[in-house]
Length: 578
Image (cartoon, rainbow, N blue to C red; front, side, top):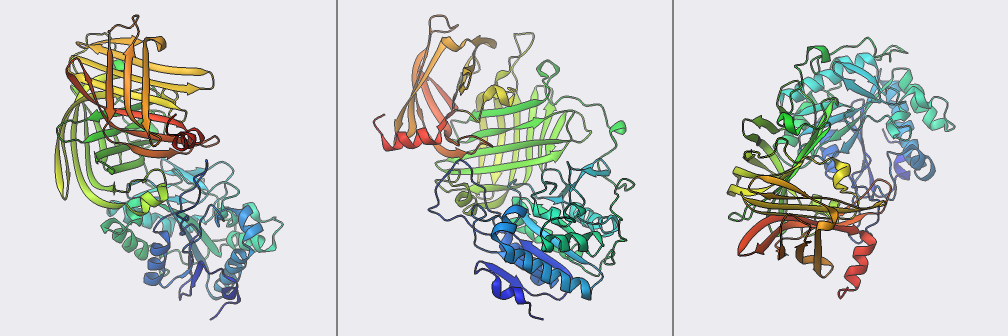
């Protein structure tokens, strides 16, 4: 049957009529215009969610409202305040559609399809609650957007079926859909007394058990075309998209107390194996942030990334960035719940494991591959031009014998192993650095300069200096024959030369007070530009990549980073002689 709201939809919003009581919404399926300015705060649109939502609607015969082209930075259909002021047609469409469906059916399912820009195949379910072991607890002031029986009879089978297909499912791990301005909360008791009649109608239908709603945040692996997306579609159609599945009936009014609900999750805390650090005991810092800085001179492969984990936290995160030369890069990012196993951290298919002489890093799964020259300046364009492909990574991080009783927080070490893609394979054997500096010690969201100079097993230099509101903050170290010697801020100077606003050459010099007499020049072999957006401050223009340095006939192949505020970088490009 036709609906009156169809004539009021903007041209960038597509409505698909269905046959079953399921409504799919893709609020962020649009694109940011290619000529849109780069500002301090930009949100990336949820790429591939428009196509995926259409595919799900066709296969399940569901109704769908799909934003297929409009930039969420101009209008965000997942924000209550913006919808009320700028998109009353969206509210009208949902009220008319859901009111009609709840008359004809006992209950209706509503799924908002979003994108989570982690590479792992993961679905974070937002229902106003968070999973804590085998329990659901409130996330802040969030209210549940579905009923207990629907969660037990429909959502849990989806979680179990997804896990069987190697798809990780989380409940509110990152996106709990609990903020009051998150549109998902309209489907809860939180908006029963809103000043909008339409919003009150949606809240009332939900509390009466006639609507069960959830927000699905899908990782890159589940959205980009490929076998992981195909597995997700099959699982969705068999569970959430199957209206004949158990739980189709209405929840009893008021059945939204999840305190008595238990389900299989992570092992209870009291049964968990005692935590054993990923790092040797003498390295221990809590929480720990571990970062890699390696450049293999033979293969030209750059290995960067790291892992962040806290024995007291339920979630840890990690990333692995491989520079293949020029603008070509391969990336993995992910978040995972902390398991009870000793001496290792696992993020999706990426496993960091403690070994007698160091660490092993292994990966089996899909990675995101970029060849876009501005992949991280206009991140959305870079993501849109990327593709996913299978990869195998087997690396060994070897720590040399320590001369000091306690290792420094920046360690010169060796990386060996192999990296294989469908079209090529790399053998890795490089000296570089691993650091366990906390995030606030590296100040990556402030202007900074970072440079690693690994000349070999007997000599290495690592320098990082950030411009903080309280003045320069630096961490530097020299390794000579395994002996770490810290550098004071006044011991060293790092200066860059620029072309077209990007660093191309640099010079390093040490003061007479430093433990080593050094003065050398280097070049940036690759330049990977980024715009790094902060939460509440100006954006940073960042250039990082692989470098080569020569000193007294010895070569150091390392990693560098140069960052400054975006406005300063723009001025530098406009004044190339600066």
